[in-house]
Length: 409
Ligand code: ZN
Ligand code: ZN
Image 1 (cartoon, rainbow, N blue to C red):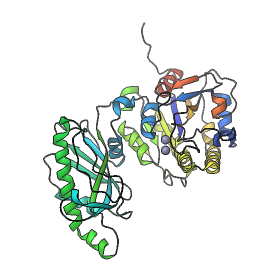
Image 2 (spheres, rainbow, N blue to C red; image 1 turned 120 degrees about the horizontal axis):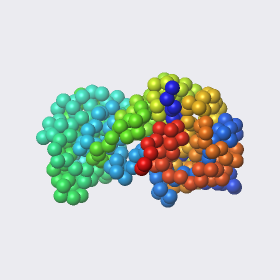
Image 3 (cartoon, rainbow, N blue to C red; image 1 turned 180 degrees about the horizontal axis):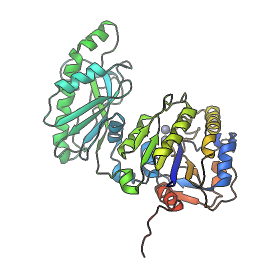
Image 4 (cartoon, protein in one colour; image 1 turned 180 degrees about the vertical axis):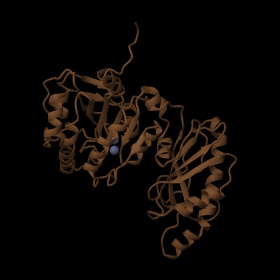
């Protein structure tokens, strides 16, 4: 059997100390500690020292792709996450169904809700948009969960050098899309035509009239943001010669997986939230290893506890992860190289992502095992990996399983 790589990423796991302790350092983590003892340890700057990573850019980097080259905004990632097969040159947006009131053009109207009263059923509205909006170029509009969606505009000479139409707060008017450079003029005109037509169709739609009668907010505007031009990016398999599987419940990470043309696996019960079924996820991950060379397992909720500033919640969730990953410890270290790390820190006291480096363990037959015997921000740096960059992680792992090519003679 060919050797495999399993990369476990616990989102926002790392932290800054409060009274000398972090959720990870104070959690009881016998399985992770054992892995640290059996492996080589270090700390890692996922993007670069001092750069605060987004989860999407961090995951791209950890998968060996330079986000400064292949990431142009959240739009393309969201669009792939929503199930659209995007092509190089496509202009993609994240979309919210919102509510506007007022008279005249859509751009004269005021946003009264950015989520259309948390509208959840949008299939009919999405269908009406796809059937009735007419543009000079092709477009694909798909719903996401709840009030969310994704829009892709496809045609010659499009540009992402344009502004968003989402005013990002209520009580403001819908923003007209403007070119930020000459190149964006044509695309801005197309977007504004889309905005106007979409509003007319949605505002008159029977489903929205029905909502209005029931005292609910109409989903009568599409607010666009996160614009990005889809770059030419090779698939993970083209770049590294390994078949990629991504086990995740979070739309954004699923989008990263699809963006690199990996198989996205979401076992039943896996939600990408605090209520996720961790054991189902681990089971799905072990299954995925049978059919893939490289599996990324993403665990999300630690980041949410970080954003919430909930030290005890984060600590308890880390303990639950530790308990559930036991089956991964039983994988044959000669067959599977196991990486345990995070995509960034989400410190309790900051409630946002920070650039503090994250701990990383690589465990495999033949690694230079060091003296580190616990998994924490304070122990990791004493290990043999020292301080590495996220973009090198795939290369380091491929070298350790003897899948690397020699550079030179
Ligand atoms: Zn993250
Ligand atoms: Zn986050």
